[in-house]
Image (cartoon, rainbow, N blue to C red; front, side, top):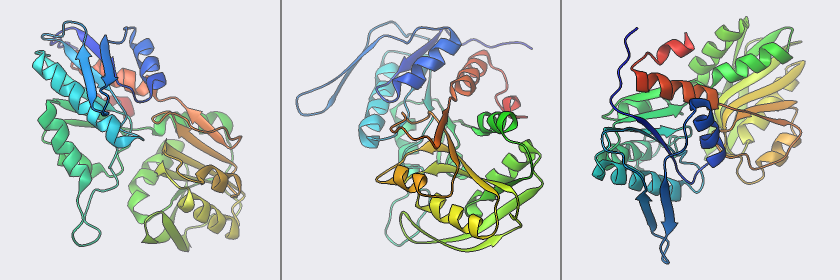
Length: 315
């Protein structure tokens, strides 16, 4: 298959999650691009690209996780610096897309911040975005530039195949996650797909009303994109246990783990939480297993640089 090179590949790593960025560079066999990121006395970002990028195919690895505003601003300033230095193409690699949960108006007079961030990225000079498990697939439509919404499922599926056998039931913790759970179940050849009827009276609070599907005697794996305060996970796990589940696992791509999330997981019926390193791991818990998505992101960057299909990675 013919390849397309628009210029030399250069990978720049922001301040957010340098461990993952380093892994990606190692997989690609490249050294991180040279740049200097500092702060002025008042906290403003002072940034300079320290090498020639004219005509280069530039990738900026910067998850916009906490502190989200600092990391987002640094990403935008890096894009602007690369654009003004005449980079051939600028691709933002955002393993975690901050503000992704603000993707619609749930109450009067509230912003759709996921769209605002998309506008900022395009305006700053981004030509393309690579993200992993966006909170909602329609966020791709918020951008006026191409977006690759990569899947974290392969790392979880590989782990489950190597470590778990028997009857599996894949659980979606809400109606919105059914498609994600269905794809996960298909890859695992799991026969049971379970949906939890959950309501959220206010942010970060979840009430479980019904479990739709048979979980009795099965090992359940709760599939979600984000674990933040872990309130939903804990509530769903208790409901599954009460309905006769044999064992309970969870697979969530982005481990935000705010407030007392780790304590909730420790005190819940969840036997193991599988997550990835899209966000720098914050805690030590025997229940939390962190899997690397560096191979997925590195392969996507390589394919994009060479003009090859990215969707074929997940067929």
